[in-house]
Length: 209
Ligand code: MN3
Image (cartoon, rainbow, N blue to C red; front, top):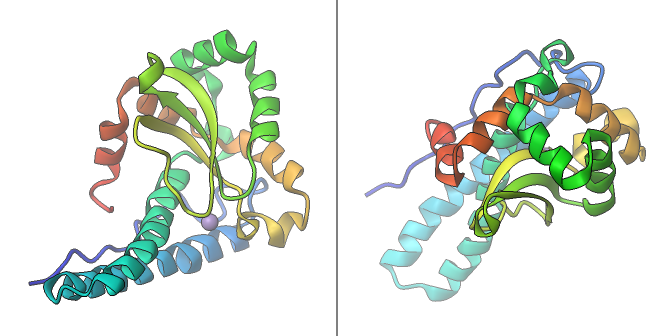
C-alpha cells in the first residue's frame, strides 16, 4: 500500500516574467526551493501517516497531522499563488468584470480595496475570498502560517506575506511589495475562480495537488 506522492507543478511563466514586481531570484528560490520543500515534507509525512494508521500509533498520527496541515497547506497555497500572478503586460482588471463590480460594490473601488487589504492582512497569507455562507459576498481574510482558507470560502486571489516572498528584494518594505503585487495579478484567473465555487478552484489544481 502506498500514498500519493505530490510533485512540484511547473510555473505557468518564466522565473523572470514577474519582474520588476518580483525578481527572478526570488521567484526561482521561492518556487524551486521553498515550494519544493513543502512538497518533500508533505510526502514524507503522508508515508509516515500510513504506517501510523496501520500500527494504531496515535501520538505519531497527531504529530503527522500537524506536519501535513503545514506542508499540505503550503503546497496548496503556493499553487494558488503562482496561478493568480502573471506578467504586468497581461495583468488587466478588465479581465475580471464581475469581480471588479463586486469590489466596487463592497469597498467603493479598487484603490479602497487595496487599502483594506493592506490594513487587514498580516503575516502568513492574505486572501480575497468569496464567502458562500453570505451569498457569495467578497471578504478579505488572513490565514496564519500555511493554513489554507477555511471551509465555506472560495479563494480568488492569494498573496504570500511571508518574508521569504519579498525580503531579498524589498528588505523590510512589505508595503512596497504589496503595492507592486497589484501590477502582476492575473485577473483572468481571479474572475474564473469567482465564477466557480471552492470545489472548482481545487479541481483545477488537482492535476498537481
Ligand atoms: Mn511562500
